[in-house]
Length: 415
Image (tube, rainbow, N blue to C red; front, side, top):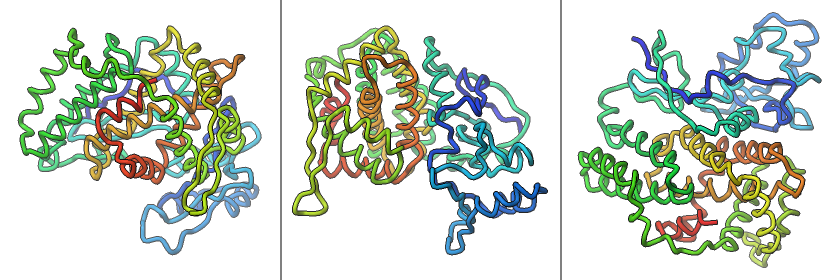
C-alpha cells in the first residue's frame, strides 16, 4: 500500500551540518537507550581495533530492564559527549561502518514520525540548531506538503500509530485531520498576534473537549468549520479578554520554578544555566521545609531582557509563529499522549510559549545576534520536547496551583 507522506515545506532541505554545528546533538549529555537489535548490529559490525576499543567504553548493557527498547545504553564521556564523536564533530562509528549501523535514535534524530492509516507525517525537532536556523529563515511560514511514497507504515518508527479503522473511528482520532486543520489554520492566521492565536486555540480546545465528554463528537466538524470561518474576519470572540493586562512578574516566577526543574533534571548545560540565572537575578533560598524554597528575581532585569527579545523580533514575528507551530506538529499535540485531555495539551502549549520567551530573552544582550536565539531555543527544545518527566512535572505544577482556567492561560501568554 502506498503511503501519503505529509511533511513541512522545509523538511526535504534539511541535512546534518556535522562539524559546523555549535551545539552538537552528540555532546549534550542525553540519556540514549536502544534495543537488542541495535545493540547487536553495532557489536557484530566489522570494526578497526581503534573503533572496537571505543565500543568497549561507549555502551553499557541494561540487564535489569523489563522494557525491550532499553536493552543497552550509551555511556557518555565526563564532558557529556558520545565516545564516537571525533574532533571534527563527526561520528566515528558512522564514518567507518556506515549509517545503517547507528542505533535507531541516532539515525532518526531530529526526525519524528506519525502514521494514521495510509498517511505518514514526518517532522523535525528544534533540538537541532540547523532546524531552528531554517525556521528563522522561513518568513512565509510553515506549509504542509503531500507526496506519495512506495512502502508501508511498518517502515516508520512512529511515536503515534493509528493503523486500524476501529482506532481511527474512536474519539478524538475520528476527527484527527479536522482538528489538525483547525490548529494549523489558527496558528497561521496573521490577522491576529501570536498571543491571540493561542487564545483562540484555547477556546477551540476547550469546546472540543466538552463535546467529547458529552459524547457529541459528531458536532466537531461543524464547529471547526464555523470557527475557521469566524476567525477569518471576526475578532469579536476576543472582546472579553482583549483588555487583560499582562502579569509578567507572576509569569517570571513561574519560569523560575520550571527553570529550576530543568536544572535539577540535568537537562541543560551548566554554563547556560548560570547565564540565564544571572540575566534575571534569580536565586533560590531553602525554607525550613526542605521540599520548598523561595525565589528571588529582579523584575527590572526581566523587563530589560524581554526588551532585547522584542527588539530583535520586531518585523520578524513569524519566527515565534514558526517555533510554536513546529513544536505543536513535532509533538503531535493534542494527540500523542492519550492520558492528556485536549485541555491538558493546551496548558502545555501555553507553558511552552511562556517559558520559551523567557529562556530566549535571558540569553540576549545589547550585542546579541540570531545565534543567541538559536542557542537558547535549541537548549530549551532539548529540555522540553525530549524529556517526558519534565513535561509531566510542568503539568502537575500548573494543576497544583489550580491555574487551569482559560483566564489563567491568557495571563500566562500575555507579554
